[in-house]
Amino acid sequence: MIPKTLEEIANYIVSDGKGILAADESTGTIEKRFRSINVESTEDNRRKYREMLFRSPVMAEAIGGVILFDETLRQKSSDGGYLRNVILDHGSLPGIKVDQGVKELEVGCDEKITIGLDGLHERCQEYEKLGAKFTKWRAVINVSDEIPSDNCISENMKALAEYALIAQQNNMVPIVEPEVIMDGSHSVERCHEVTNQTLLVLFEMLDKKNVNIKGTLLKPNMVLSGTENKYQATIDEVAEKTLQCLKSSVPDELPGIVFLSGGQSDLDATAHLDAMNKIGGFKWKLSFSYGRALQQAALKTWAGEDDNLEAAQEAFSHRAIMNMKAAQGQWNKSLEG
Ligand code: 13P
Image 1 (spheres, rainbow, N blue to C red):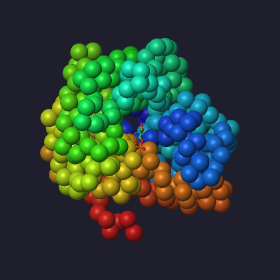
Image 2: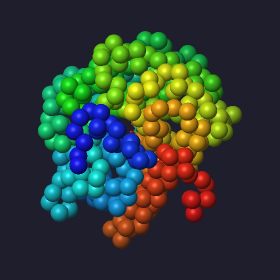
Image 3: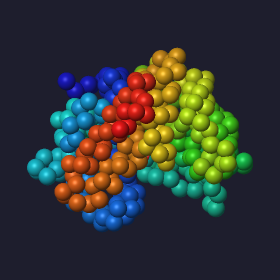
């Protein structure tokens, strides 16, 4: 049975170790991913690749929802039906990215603001009619010694709260994604500080707007050392610091937290999630909404060849199962084979 209310939808997506496949790469981003395997980003190639993922038998077991880009929500599958129905037929829910990317917060600065509130209500009305059950909006917070400014955090979190309310008014669960970016030379402590402040402001804004927290999912970054920092936090440190951060800012009634992978290796993304679930001590489900960390292996295996589609499905299935186990604190390295 397809869940109907906001709360049913949010709970369904993260039930029994399930998580989200983020397949909402914009036209520019998917072109970059395809270029890495020397494949041209034509509409047909995008369809073929994503249909391979959505038809994987693992979908029913491990993937509660798929985030789509506008094109994919409207796109036909190879049998003349719609890709969104392939997702539903595999027991998963289609969702849609509704932000329209980022621009500079002020001319010439390194801070960003996400755009897309203009006309959002109308777009959401249409997406709901097309069958989307949930939505996603990503805010980008860059980190250095000087940034983010309080203004950058509050403007981005305000937009996230406004978006969340509009999504709920259209019967779709909002996934609020405040991404503190891992690129940079900052320390893990600095990431902790910025992530903590960001989440506190976010939940204050959601509360102010009367967003229904029980019908919302949070998609945060993990607390990591900046990629250029000499000291890289261990798996246990990342897990402890991330949980500390979430426990001090996220209300208990939120049904689920679904992490982004943000450029972590496939294994790190899985190991961190597992370590947090092994520690426990929280009310929300702690799961995944990975793009790269779920797709990298499948993309490489496919390499644009029809003969490789089945092997690519297997590569995707493996990562999905590993992350499902991690979402239940039941993963260990020996399962990787
Ligand atoms: P990554 O897991 O590759 O960070 O993608 C998740 C996502 O949806 C980014 O907006």
